[in-house]
Image (cartoon, rainbow, N blue to C red; front, side, top):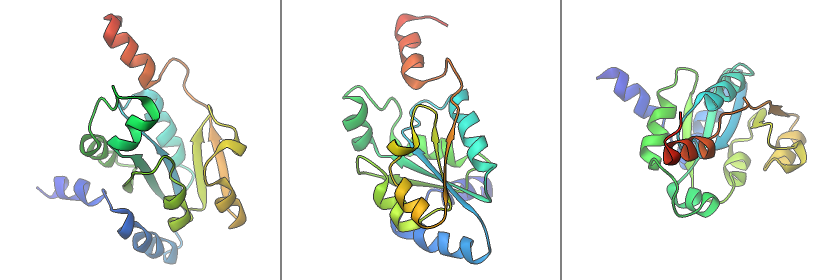
Length: 165
């Protein structure tokens, strides 16, 4: 089962990710970071993650824990538990690490790894991106990626509830 082990190895604790990032940076890799709930992975997520991955050598995804998703999205969420969401993201070939965070924002995680590039979807302005000042003060870039219209977990949830396709 080497494939399964390789995928599981991409799910890294917040305590271990700093060491991994140091190794990658020593090799000259450009670290890209993005974050989110990724509750029901859909085409909009994939497009954003592919674009993020293309900006560097290593893509790290900060993934909200179930507790933090409930705080952000309400008690009916997440639809998928954190272990399932982490495994699905880790199975993507262009994802190098998935790190769960329990806080409302990934600020502490960003501060501990200081990626060179921070990516968020087009529903954010740069001045709203958590951790942007950390990245910019260390010579990095904050990149806002256009969202694919018509794709969101909220929209999918509504379609499922209403029985629409």
